[in-house]
Image 1 (cartoon, rainbow, N blue to C red):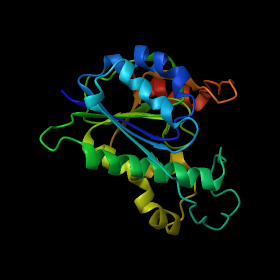
Image 2 (cartoon, rainbow, N blue to C red):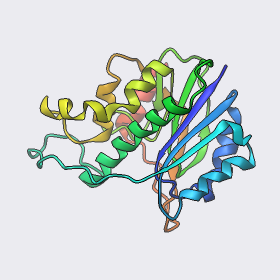
Image 3 (tube, rainbow, N blue to C red):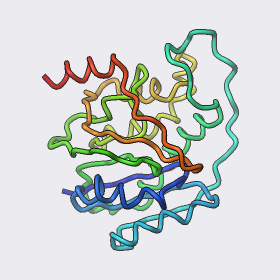
Image 4 (spheres, one colour):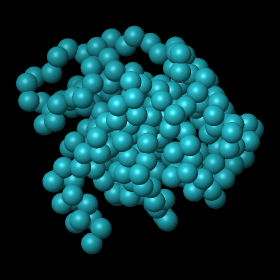
Length: 231
């Protein structure tokens, strides 16, 4: 068993949450190798904390300049059932960064190794619970905060599904032309529509740079779907 762990986007509060992520998630992964593509900013160096627990030979890091991406026109009112939680530019950069993370993985991975599991994890997550699934024939994403699609902050999947997940940006123009909203949970769910997306047992919040936490916020719909899928 070999696991690829892909961090992308911004390092954010990784320096503070790394011990938490190590205990709840990273130490449970079999033969992990890390592919870290983060924005070149004041927090970028925080990701070297991975060296505290893992051999630097299996930790690949790049710092990138995130581009200014042309924004699509405003959408018709009510196109997305759930409102966006970030600006259009932030969503575009998130999707771009996921795609760049996948490109970095392709550039640095061991061509002679098979990666049985790919883990997508954000650098600012602070966990209360995480249970690694025992099978990888499907895509596992957190059962809550799906907002009509999939929770886009964490995922466990095989390499074929991971390629679709991480490369959503390459299909963005086509999706928008077909009427999709610029809503990341919806767009990533559309990328994964040919895969079973099963609930991942994971609860966490996000540590913002100002020290506040985003809430763990399951909805009644999330709870009902979780109960149905785990019967």
